[in-house]
Length: 91
Image 1: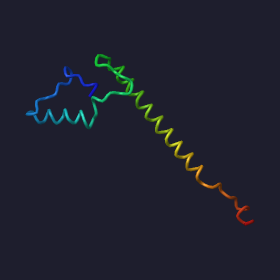
Image 2: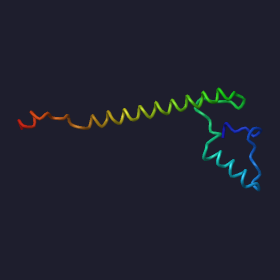
Image 3: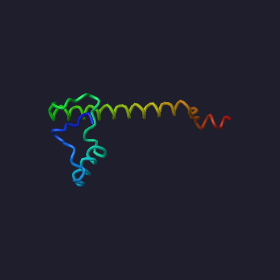
Image 4: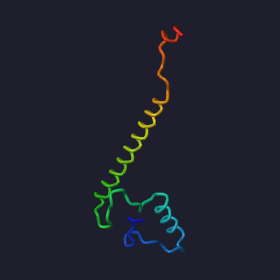
């Protein structure tokens, strides 16, 4: 909850169940208060926060792409080379 600002998003009273449920949903489901990999301070502008989120998404996408490429290359390294029809008939 490093992006949580008690002035902007105060934790509601637990007796007010609807507001408290909404707060918990924002906190755990929507992950509204989770910090991006690029540290964003509480007083930074909305534009800076959007840019930080875009950067984080781009980094995640790039990491996933690298993982897929690595998995594909390791699969191709494990498979024997394909034989052509001519090679199969010779054997």
